[in-house]
Amino acid sequence: MLQIGLIGYGTVGSGVYERLSTTSKHIEQLLGEEIKIVGILVKDRQKKRALDVDAVVTTNWEEFCQIGQYDIIFEAIGGIEPAFSYTAEWLQRGIPVITANKKLVAEKGSILEKMAEEQSTYYGYEAAVAGGIPIINALKGTLMTTSISRVAGILNGTTNYMLTEMIENQRSFTDVLIEAQQLGYAEADPTDDIEGYDAWYKIRILSHLCFGEWPTEETFSRKGVSEIEDWHVEIGERFGFKIKLIGEACVSKSEVKGRVTPAFLTLTEPLANVRGVMNGITLEGKSINELLFIGPGAGKEATSNSMVEDFIFHERVKSVNRTTNLDVEEEKETIAHALLFIKHSQREEALDWVKDQKIAVIDTCDHPEGEGWIICEKNLPSPFKEYPIYGDVALRKRTKTMHSTQFGAF
Image 1 (cartoon, rainbow, N blue to C red):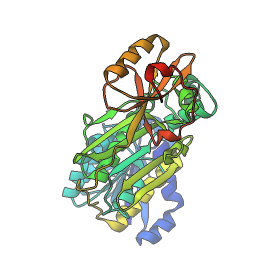
Image 2 (cartoon, rainbow, N blue to C red; image 1 turned 180 degrees about the vertical axis):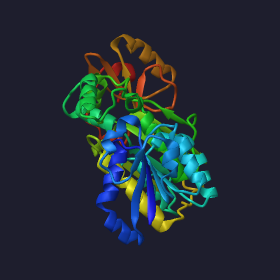
Image 3 (cartoon, rainbow, N blue to C red; image 1 turned 180 degrees about the horizontal axis):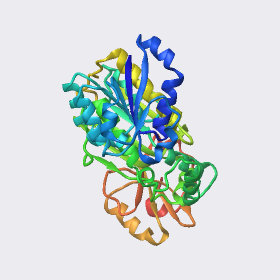
């Protein structure tokens, strides 16, 4: 019998318990062995929720460790500590651990994977990225030897919901943030979502799977959505662009580069049509061209399902090590243009800046609160708010060009 330990009984932890309980017979058929959740470690405030479970429930770490001879641990508490100490303890004992903790995996994954390797066990984190989308084990399994040159995605359902509402229903940033909190999509403190941390952890994990290196926080830049103003979204819409929070990693000059940033997507870009709380991920490579994955990025059922499937996948495969290297065709430049936003009071300064930097302005759009200029991207520090454009700007909606005499013919 496989004895299972569960750390945490919040939304995800209770979902794992329910998923294992309701599908135990099917899982046992697949694994050829009986499974049983024997111990659950909870916080005091979670204990009442776990009163009716068929397992020993405790708030004491030492007692949890002594409940049974665990064969697998599910970690569902989040954060770095005590999750790191708990996970390290079991991996060093040779006991596999399954997690949905993206911050822990991004920050400590290199250490924990090394521990697992040294003890001939595994550390599974399928549910740490994009909830119900099986992207991690697709990379570990069916795409094990496939060369990837770029991975990009909409990796945070909260911000995608907010931006979708702003675009489709012309609602304000503040209004949709409050609603997202009321619906449970955003926490009372929404910093991790709106400042891009959540997506930043996830793209770092995906980068590791695609390119074989664990990126540090210094090598992947991060910009959230808190500085997006309502009129920025309106101007993007006039051009026919959709604004999204994009996480991206690619190989450039034999180095892995990555970032999280708001970006405008033309309607021909596959991720432009990922709406609401859904997540979307694209993989690009010479032999696959482009693969698109779309699905729920969070939620009790989706996340717990991914954790259980991750357990079954690893138990059946046991050793899964993706072949990765940087000897791949480098990603062609994906960002050729950007959308620059200037307030009316900044107009003369902006004219001088594009002239001094020899930056071509392709098109402009006027708005009561300012102007939006489509410029040729030169990767220069900008004194104005600027967001990249993904896709072919030639396919944009045509707006009435403003101030053409200053820029010349468009």
